[in-house]
Length: 67
Image 1: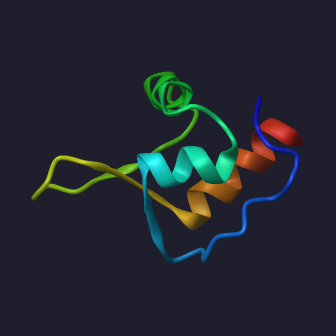
Image 2: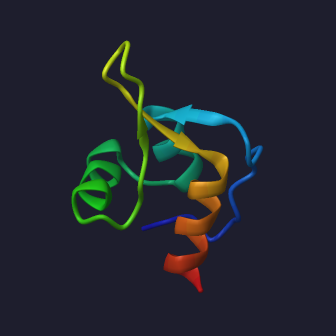
């Protein structure tokens, strides 16, 4: 279940999947499921292949899930 506390993030910063999951209070696998369902949209770092989540996207996703 997603945390009821709003994410404390900098809107223009980027967070790894592990950091984003911790911020949202969900397991990393849940975050991956949300990504596959197109509920949250990360950016992909082309040099490392890792997904990065913007603070703005984390806040948008949290609001869409909590209301």
